[in-house]
Length: 294
Image (cartoon, rainbow, N blue to C red; front, top):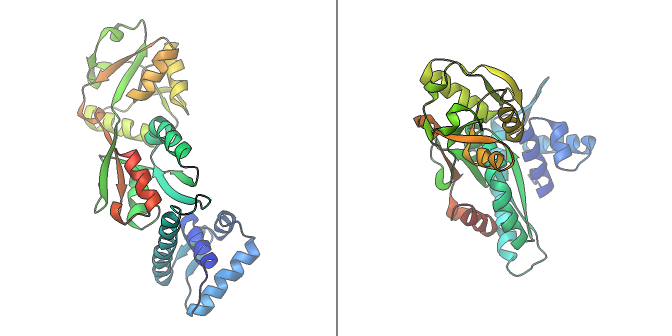
């Protein structure tokens, strides 16, 4: 059987997206051409590689095996490109980086800006996922690097420190709580809150912690999609907000809000850089990993 690199890249895109249509789009290929290639691959191997259903496709056992080896082949190609990049400045390399909401919003923009500016031949395919989803993807060999919360079981993945991500309470400047340096979440009982949109991984973590530790759910007056929006609501006295310290500091510079540290254990968090094997990464990915976790 003979599969070319285009076949392998297409198959990985289809498996990762769970859709032939989306996979073809990611591979920059017309749907009829992609479908024909997939049928040709199945004919060559003599086995079905995908289970087609109403909600998309799932790899069969043979498909999972092919996907595993396809990733190994493509990673080796990337490694070759990275090392040859030392000899050819024109050759481009790519790193697939998975990151959770906190890393995407608070830390990665600045860190990637300096690194990418200094490495014009490198592209980063950045994907936002929940930490638990990142662990599963990395364990399956999808992606080069991931950034996760330390509260998630990382299994056999290797980890390095990335950044602290403590949660704090944002309150209006004139609120009595603004004079406090530390506060326990239990002391906010009876206060109104504002939060991020339903399903946001950060907000889900905060809400679950509040329910688990204090036995009461957070009741939100309104939910918005950004920390900046939450800070504006806090400034107007609509409600309090629990958010990362970096987001509260940024809001405090522009708005009349104060930041009070939470003394609860669940509010002290760390972000970790994870990988299956840092030493086995292609040269360009190793360089980015070293930059992200100095």
